[in-house]
Length: 198
Image 1 (cartoon, rainbow, N blue to C red):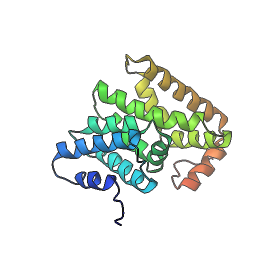
Image 2 (cartoon, one colour):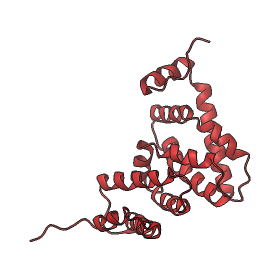
Image 3 (cartoon, one colour):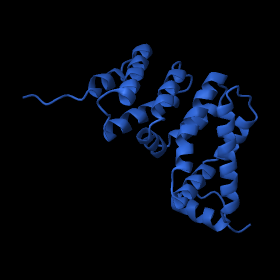
Image 4 (cartoon, helix red, strand yellow):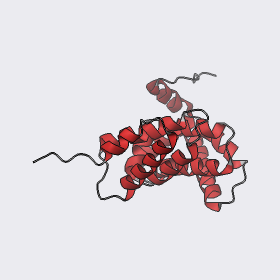
């Protein structure tokens, strides 16, 4: 009896091709199979695939950025993929793309991805976890990015509401956070940017 091969193997091989069209079509198929197929993607393959998507966002002038964002929009509706995306610092890749000149459609897609990732981290957690997640977002300078997004016009009211929700939640968290708490967290994270002594 032969060992059953993973359904992901063949498609993951296509992700290494030089033809961008084939690569991104394979990516779209993987995304749909991962979300709606009968075989769930195991944790290792989730990590490989979500990391690949994050790395695609980091490629300057990638002709397929919008396709990558569409895959992320679909994947990040599912808790397991959101968790992996957050753990591999996918958010910074989104923020970097948003910081450049991108069109409205891409802004919408990336904002949706941020919303999918963060709203879950803030709504469905214990209080201590909520505070820690909010602090991580503050340290990653998400408030500044949200201010930039607030100044932009979005036709979709859900996007506006979600940006407002996240901004208000983070502002409240900042007010509740003592400078010593933030200092301790920065030391633990290895990203010391300021001193508690002013």
